[in-house]
Length: 363
Image (tube, rainbow, N blue to C red; front, side, top):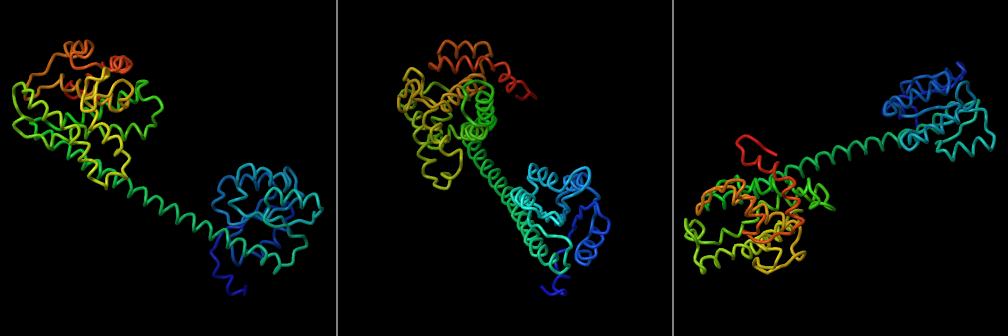
């Protein structure tokens, strides 16, 4: 590489670690036209400088025989810290015995250059390596920046998708003359039970978040139920109830007809919950008559959350029940039989869940 080409190399800082002032001055004279130079008089001082701010250095020129800490000891510490993969270190030394060379290369030193140094030799042998490491750093920074942008975009897409899901679910609730608060409470109850009881055992936090989001769509199939049935103020006839029950299969079918959702983490849970949130532990639920552990944990939790919320709030066909009556009905099985383990978990956190129904409070 011609000298004029060296002038255009990215400016960096070279640390010279040598106890001999004359040696430091010689190396400084060679490298100062192209790099900022810092100096350390012994291995301990040099190691401290490297570990304090390794990102500020583009190379280290290291002597072997020094007081306080020799060059090999410095290399050992740098290897332990994982520095030798990120920062090129060159031994500039008169100590070139086989044992020193062998250990130095095994530790990860980039090159060993004997003293007395020949200026153009030491410069060329170090220059190309420094350029390579600088290029790696630039590439790493570019990749990290791109990753950060991609993560931000992914987060924005997730927030958009969640907003669309919440809007769809809330629209269905408004259609049945209920507020969108119902779906938000189902989300919160489901998430709380899975996070704070053994019902969520084995599920990662990310999975629980996806299940809670999927719970919002539990009643999406009601979009296919006629208004006259959906908003009937009195008790449904047997025929009307059969139509109402179809919202489970209609909801699952609707979600399955949206292929874009398949790549979304909550999709699998949403289809299962929409279809099976009215199944019961004793097999007397609908639409498939699933029994016991045939019902997924998430469908079980959403099922109980739905019943708890429905009993606790005013609906077009009934007034809200007092909290004591709600708990009695759930415990006695008046609204269907639930998994005994789920009931135990639910009652262990119901005090916290009840805050959702106290104005201004949250869990």
